[in-house]
Image (cartoon, rainbow, N blue to C red; front, side, top):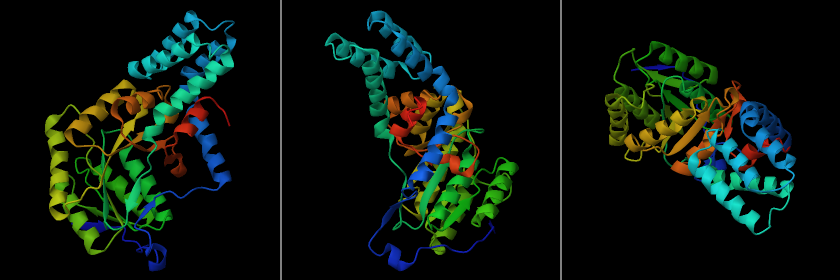
Length: 340
C-alpha cells in the first residue's frame, strides 16, 4: 500500500461539532453566489432548453386556442426530448383534465402549470448528501462506466468537502487503468489530501480495504473510493463491485454509507438503463448527473427521477470546480425556462 499526497488533517474544532452529528456538505450560499451558479446552470442547460423548453414555450404562448392539437404538440415535444413516456403521460393527463375544467383557458396559465408539474416531478430527488460525522470515516463508493466523469467528480467533491472543513482520504480503486490512478493522485495533490493506491492491475477491493483501514486509524471524516469504470452489461465486472462493498463491510459493517453512481447525461436513455442495472447489482443510494452542459438530452433527468426515485446528490454543468452543485428542482426548471 502506498499513500500519496498526505495533507494536513482538517477536522473541525470540538466546539463546532459537540451538538451536531450531521452536516450538509454544502452550506447555504449567500445570494450573489447562488445567482452566479444559476447563470452557469442556465448556460449549461442551453442545449436542452433549445431542444425541450423553447419549443414548448413558443407553441403554448403562440397558440390562439387551447385545444387537443396543442396538447398533441406538447406531447410530441416532450417525447422527443428524452423526458420519458411515463413523465409525458402524467403531464399530458394533468393538463388535459385541467383544460377540460377550464382551469387553463389561456397559454400563460398552461405554461405556468407545465412548469409547476416539472418541478413536482423532480422535487423528490432533491436530497443533498449528508455526511454523518459519527461514522468516521463516512465512506463514499463511486461507481459508473468509463467516460462518465467519475474521477473528475471525485476531485471536485473533495474540494467541496475540504472547504467545509472535512478531512478527506481518497482510494485509487480504479486499478485497471494506470491513468486513472495518476489522475486521482493529481487531484489528491491539488486538494492536499492523502491518496491510497497500489500498482496498476492490483485488486480493487484490497485497495479500498487498505484505504478504509488507514482512514479509520487516522480518524478521517470522509473516505472516497474510486472504482474501475465498468460497462453495466459486463456481469463479471459488476461482481467485482459487489466484492468491493463486501470487503469494506467486513472492516466496517456500515461501509460504504453512500454508493454514488455517476451518470453521463449526454447518453440519454442509456443513462436510465445504466442506473437501473447498477441499482439492481450494487444498490445505489445517490446519483451524480454530469455533462449536462454538453448535451440536448438533459430531459433524461425527469425520466430518471420518475422511474427510479433515487436522490440526485449533484449535477455537473461545466468543467469548473464550482460547476458541480447540489441538485435543486426549482432552479433546474427555472434554468430550463430562463426564469431568473
